[in-house]
Image (cartoon, rainbow, N blue to C red; front, side, top):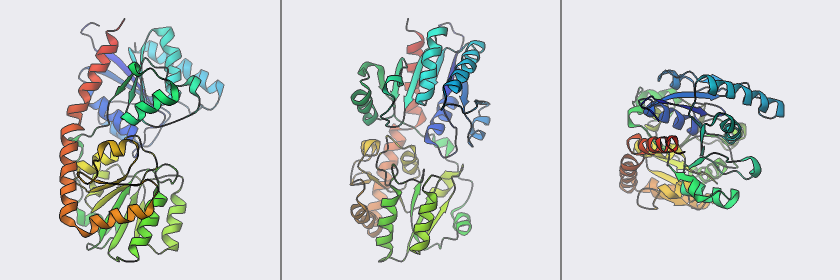
Length: 364
């Protein structure tokens, strides 16, 4: 390639405030813009404002992905867009766009990359056609090899990342406690993310919290996010008279970490959740289920605690361990902070993306 900047198009279904994939795309775009011209296309979402801050205006496609006609319309529109903007690399972040990019690349000779951030099992014939796949964890790499028979040589593991510069606090702890009506003497347990049972295991956290709160009246549970089980969660809280609040996703989520004494990730499956890096960077002690990318990051009893996935009793015991020993909890938090700061910030991760982009551009 010449010294002229290459053009990279990122494709994602929805760019939402609370979506870890959307945050990752933003961080990639923000931190690679000095070397590449960046473009973004999606079906919509509530997270466009963060892209405004880096002068990227996402192209919005109509969401017709559940029909053949819709697929053809998207193919034509993206083909035209790639041709007009002389796109050199399509970086997809969703399987639907991976397939679209596959067809476009064979006509325009564009290089393709697909990031894989979740475990899926269907549509194997139509999945993961890109020249290079980026797995967000070793567990995802293993999944791609075992379930989709992907050649290991096509897979690069690049972990998720955080940018310490993005963690500027704009509200005080006192302001937030008053806003949420949380007494200042409460031990606050938090979870931020999608509110569903099947993948995120919120039911496990609720059951553990219910049992513990019968014995310890100074506990408070803060859930921030949206999801299909939000109504059921609120009903559970009301019926059991739990000291808890559920609020919608926040763009300034970093502020709310100030409230927490403990962050819990009760997932049944979770490739490599970005929020655990955020919790680490905010020096919060963390308990996570022993699955996928959570167990890749957390070394049990060194920088966090792991519990048996779906086991509310085990989670309950781990919560009590943190609750009863503040010094121990603080040491875990400090160790996790050091690990995240030294290994999972944009300074360490972005060069892997840059190297991959340059490598694929220079291949015949």
